[in-house]
Image 1: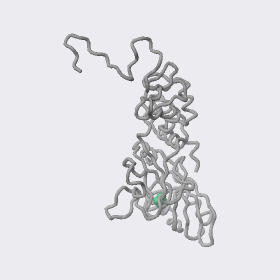
Image 2: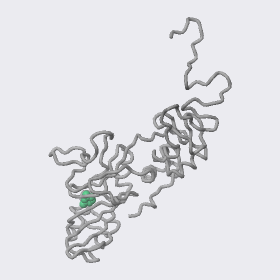
Image 3: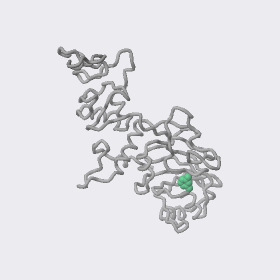
Image 4: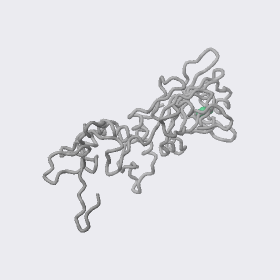
Amino acid sequence: MRAKVGSRPERPRGPGRASPRRRTEAAPGETDRHGKIRAPEGEDSGERLQKFLARAGIASRRQCEALIAAGRVQVNGQVVRTPGTRVRPGRDHVRVDGEAVRAGDAVTLLLHKPAGYITSRSDPQGRPVVTSLLPAAGLPRLFPVGRLDWDTEGLLLLTNDGELAHALTHPRFGVRKVYHAKLKGHPTPETLALLTRGVRCDGEPLKALAVVPLHPTRQNAWLAVTLEQGRYRQVRRMCEAVGHPVLKLIRVALGPLRLGALPRGQWRPLTPDELHNLRAIVLATRPSGPGGEPATGRRGRVLRTSRTRERP
Ligand code: URA
């Protein structure tokens, strides 16, 4: 309806507008005076605030409850101190320490890559690519984090979170990767020591952080090899250099993530705890502030790094 010339513009009415008299009850979707978001009638009533925050990688659910209780979380512009408050992702505006939180923007999946797949979204030679193991619909465009050789199996992350991919793959940050390698023959302890002391391959110094012998078979040794470097075909080239070519290679861990019992060719989303631990790596890889203070997150919070949890 057009406003009459010279008249005051009409005040909008509707579910989001309180009555001009003293407001006693929040409208659907608004925060009431107890800090609770009122669920919209007959609609999805959202999810608990601490779960929403944990899913967004802010912190563990328990830690998010503490953030809420400390008054550091706002929903639709109001501080909310009640952890059970329900929010509707994509509709309610959630901020932590003043910075917007969007759960659901970033998608990260853990895939058990089988041998015989290229770590890429496409291959000019038409070989199978890892993304063909994901559903054709319902996921955003995801990219592999780092690479596994065509013939290497194991833990591969796929994400649309560029910052995460950078933190996990940049050599400067030295995120640990653990491989189980089946070797031709049985290397002596002295030979194994060469791998951690460092070997030169094509003029390039390569070194493992740790090498642990696993169950041997009659013909073969199995090793757990931990790398902080991530050079091209590093495990294969190092083992070859000491006279024991790799016959099979499986990545079983990447930073805080474990392959576990996920079957070959299957994938799963990360758990909130895993996302939280990855987020801590991202924050820890940011430069320190000018006074040498710990790195702060995008949301300005000082977070403890979980690198100490990063065991092989
Ligand atoms: N080292 C290798 O040799 N190959 C891989 O795929 C990963 C690490």
